Image (cartoon, rainbow, N blue to C red; front, side, top):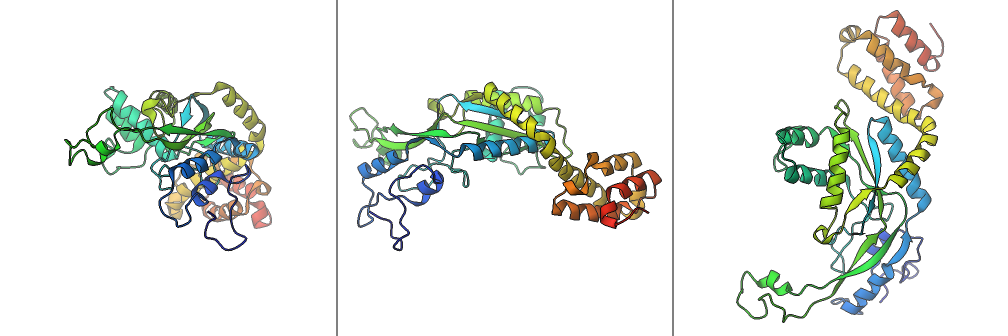
Amino acid sequence: MPLPLYKGLHALDKPQGQENMGLWFERFYSAYPDDFSKVDDRARTAWLKDCARKQIGDSARLKSKALQLRLLAKSQGGDARVYSSTGQFVSGLGNPHPLENGFHWHPTLGMPYIPGSAVKGLLRGLIETAYAGDDKANILLRWFGSEDKKDTPERAGQFIFMDALPIEPCDLHTEVMTPHMGQWYAKGQKTPLAADTQPGDWHAPVPIAYLVARKLKLQFVIMPRSGSDSTELTQLWEALSAALLWLGAGAKTAIGFGQFKLDEDEEQALAAAASIQEPANIRIFDLDRLLRELAEQLSTCSVSEIKGKDKSNLAWKLKLTGHKLNDMTPLQRAEAKRLAGLCMAIEDKKIQAHIRDFFSELHGTHN
């Protein structure tokens, strides 16, 4: 039945391959009966099969996004790595949907992905369950901000976990689960001796179809928080690799779903593509970081305190790795102008020279 929309606004009954699959799946379910009563199981399964297709996603857009995040991670002292699924992946089965089995989509890419919070939780789960070192409590505190996830974090963890996004199109397929003992889980606690609730092989299975992703390649990005020690980043990646391979991400990991392994071929290809763009892009990210660090250092100081700061450190920051005003975005120029006023309070000829050279276009002339 068509959706109850104004004339001319009806969605297509089947996806055509160019739309945002996540949006279509979430908002344009069209297998309702005429009276919008309970959805027929056969109609629901048929609609779900229309979602199954090969190669969903815009390859060029995904690759561009992956390169941007990789360059951002490098500029902040972090790293990015590509992992490929060894089987099937599904997430968001509990999300509300007429199918009664949802799916977790990226809101703009329309692709399956793993949120950064889930990546962080997966890594923490590995440390809590599999690591037995004496420094376990300290690692949990440093990496995640608290020794016990039930506690209110004492501070932010040392690392930032970005969403794991696909780097290329993936396939969508339908799978079927056949629970035999639904009544036992629903009513077994209240009526454990009833014939229709007792678990047994005389119950008829109830086939339930759901959507899964295959051939999924995700780029994971981890960055150290500003002012944090990044020396443990290698250990972090080793732990994440073990978690993705042995614990798995998403739903149904007990039957082998959600397992990923490092894809060295894709990693090398992305790293090579990033190295071509790095000279033009890394400077933008680097400038953002340097301006932010300088602002943090100067914003907490009075003029007299600024004069007493480590002059060599400030001089290095003011060089800004050779950036010119023409390289800046409008927001960066505005921030640079504000910082110039603070820096002028420093009475040091060498630093004043750096200030005059860098901000000459803002002030109009050299003094």
